[in-house]
Image (cartoon, rainbow, N blue to C red; front, side, top):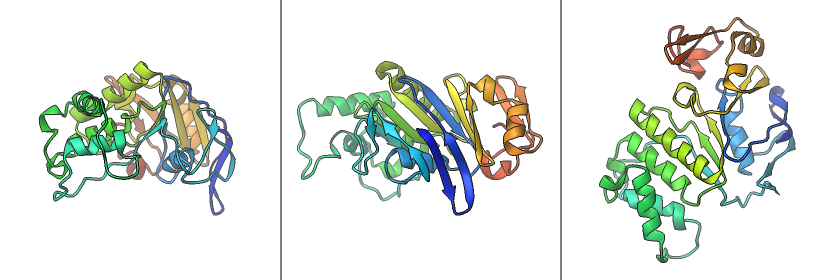
Length: 262
């Protein structure tokens, strides 16, 4: 992204953003609700437009037709309980869902689906209806689906929301294994940095119409966040977790109060 800006009416969400995602790099995107995190991912996918600036994805300009080398994990929404599609079928869509016409199995596709199910620790419920699975099980399947084409760029929109600790760790491991094995760049939007803190290379923090980009040590600092928000913000460490105190609209955005975790 070069000179990227996003506006909504008279409000500037961010501007003059230059961002290069390196192969194998994991960048976490943080910020309050309405700061343009999801819209940034949609712009990279060619579904929304920047107000100004350019986006180049894997050496090509963004096209609305999409790019199968880009994987996307949307915000989690539980599937209806009466959904009859099996877990296996959901992952299969990541393998052959781009093809027109009837899904005719091709050599090796069954093995590919089985491998993705195994990576998601989903082999035991591969033939169960997805509507009967827990939210964490469904989310692991969505990640497996997004990784089916071995994307070189992975966009994840709050993939850890509403998951228990075990499923958060499982999703993070899947994403981390993929980016290391395939040299894939990852942009991961999250309201909670702690589950990915040990894996993340850089943080892009959007707030107050501005942004800060750098390593966790460079961005998650009281002086940096106070400057972004224009208010006193404190960053404290509780064990191996970070606590942010005083960020405006924190209840709405990071889901923490003064003693909660970022």
